[in-house]
Length: 119
Image (cartoon, rainbow, N blue to C red):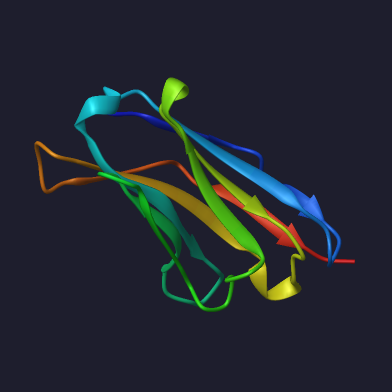
């Protein structure tokens, strides 16, 4: 059973930064993609950023976070990191980490971490 453990959420003022981490228990060689979604109250879950793993990892971002958020991967720890800068109140949401494996079509999810941007 794959487990994803998220950390790094919290309360930050507008313009501030946070760094989210998601550590996966799966074998690194079996991972095909990792990333982050978010869900704000009353809204649908949306993709924030993702990495497709292969010959030269490919990243993708929601238009609303381009230039402010950066996704990266620590292969040694099988961890995906989301560096969030210039945070805005509209970034407030629960952020969920996900992982896709090469051996199954099932997507694995973390438990979610709250990010609140407020003065």
